[in-house]
Image 1 (tube, rainbow, N blue to C red):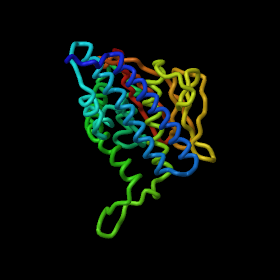
Image 2 (image 1 turned 90 degrees about the vertical axis):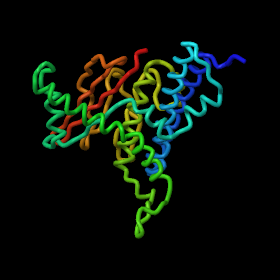
Image 3 (image 1 turned 30 degrees about the vertical axis):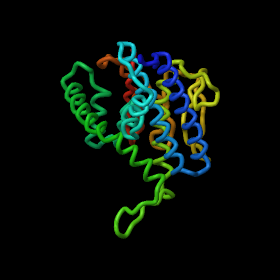
Length: 269
C-alpha cells in the first residue's frame, strides 16, 4: 500500500516544531526571570530538540519529494533520540575567548586581517579545525547539561549533582545561544504566533536587567545582539559568504576584555 505521508504533511510538522521551540524558549525565559535557572536550562534544551525536529522533518520532506516513502513509525524513529535532535538543532557555532588567549588571538586575526592575506587564511584554517572538534561534542554536551539541570545523581563517591546549583551565568548563555539559532529560522517567516518568543515585527533580544533576563525589542531585524562582559553589544556587521549549500552569516562582537564570533548557517534550499 503506498505511503500517505506527503511533503505538505512533513512541512506542517516542521513548522509546528519550530513554533513549539519558540513557546518553550518563552517559558524558559519566564523561569529564568523567576530565578529557576536549572529549569530554564531544561526547557531550553528541549526547545533545541524541537529545533532539531524541525530540521529533521524538513530533510525527510526533501527525501519524499524525490520519491522516497516513509511510515509514521519511521518518522518517529528519526525524531526519537535526544542527542540526534541536539545535533540537528545545532545551527551555529559560537566562539568566546579572552582577547590575549590563543583562541582570542586567532579570532582577532580573522576579524582584523584581509581575507586574502596569509595571516587570515592560516587563522581561518586553525579556527575551522577547532570548530570541527567543538561541533562533534556540542550535541552530547547540551544533552548532558539538560540531564545535570534536571536530575540528582552521584558524581563520585562523595559528591552528588545538584541541579539547584546551576548558575545564572550558565543559564543565560545557554538560553542566549538557543534564541539566536531560533531567531535565524523564525525570521524566514514561518511562524506568526504572538505567543512564541519572537514576533514578526521585532527581534526580541535576551539581555541582563536587575531582575535577570528580559525580552527587549530591537527595530533592527538584520542584527543580533549578545552580552559580552557586562554590557549589551550589537553585532557590528554581517558578512555573507557561500558555505557549501548554505550561506554563513558571521557576526562579530568585541569589548575591551573579551571577543565573540557567531557563525550562523542558514539553509537556503
